[in-house]
Amino acid sequence: MTLTLPTATPAGYNFGFLDELSKKTIRRALLKAVAIPGYQVPFGSRELPIARGWGTGGLQITLSLIGRGDIVKVIDQGADESVNAVNLRRLIERTSPGVGVTTSTREATIIQTRHRIPETPLAPSQILVFQVPLPEPLRVVEPREAETRRMHAEADYSRMWVALYEDLVRNGRITRAAGYPVLVNRRYVMSPSPIPRWDVPRLHQAEHLSLFGAGREKRIYAVPPWTDVEPLAFTDYPFTVERFETPCARCGSRTSYLTLVPDEGSRRYVCSDTEYCDRQVAMREEER
Ligand SMILES: [Zn+2]
Image (cartoon, rainbow, N blue to C red; front, side, top):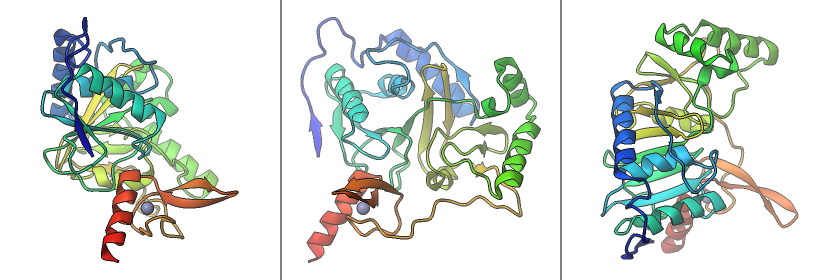
């Protein structure tokens, strides 16, 4: 369902909430990020009427990019109707007259997401904007910002490899689940935001542009279309994604990422991408 709300911008507010100069600065950082895939570009994160840590980085990117005629979808862990997604969508809607909002992955021109990539493959014309809590993949091995900057500059990722190796030795496998570190364009190690492992291979050579915004940490980075994104792994311990024993309890899909939800005293696995799940259910009913 797509809604276009022809309301005027609320008095005292600019289109897209941010002032034009701020939007321009953010777009400039985005251009740099696209030019250097995986590199974290510092930017002057603006104040927004939502708390930092609730998606302000992603939201600033979305607000800087939208224009009249755009259609925006916002998801939180794959769901369109969670509180965070609903509130961010409402803010975009109210401050950006002429911009449509949708739950349909295929109709959206910009999809802002927290921790998931939609199951429906994205087209080259679509932009995926990630809300990122912790942009620095090396923070787990190095607390000093200056030192992580040096490590990135010199492509000195030895400590990251040692950490992965130690994890393997202790646990028999690499235990990192969400935000698995990846090498982008064979140059920068990047955190793909806390998406599940399931979504990581879907960034590799993707047709769409992925933009990452960390508002609290003031960093923007990007994966342009047709870019190599390789998870860090060892030849004898290759990267693997989550496996599910059962199909989705709602739509029966065996090819989507599932989450455990409570269901009348027990629990069941359903698609984390609610729009995808709804569409599969609708398609199955049509077939009947
Ligand atoms: Zn499903």
